[in-house]
Length: 149
Image 1 (tube, rainbow, N blue to C red):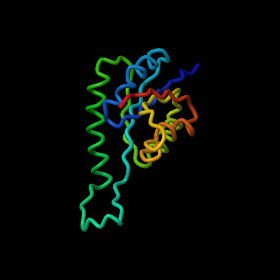
Image 2: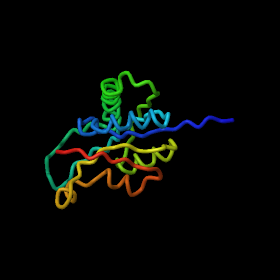
Image 3: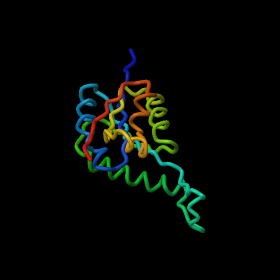
Image 4: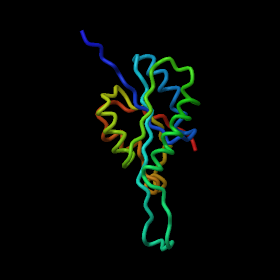
């Protein structure tokens, strides 16, 4: 008999808004007997040529990933201290929604728990919505916890 290990994916951007979904993630992980995979996605830095800023030193993708690993470790230590289930910290690179969906699929996630600002109208158009894209493309259920800004 094989034991199925269930996972819960918790994307974060290190903000207090994303941390607002942690009580839900912790409770679900307990109920599902699941581990929490805390993920952060690093996007490749770029500057739009129309800005004409002259020479600009951008951090490398490796530098951004290293910094994100440190911040993710600190985030997990701060927010998941005392959590008695296993946790996994993973830094991904690419478009956030795409990477969250792909990681969740690869990890055979039981659920994704993330926040949404609940923007609508022009704010939604201008700011986009990673949560909305994840909701549309994920293979597993997604719990979107609305935060107030």
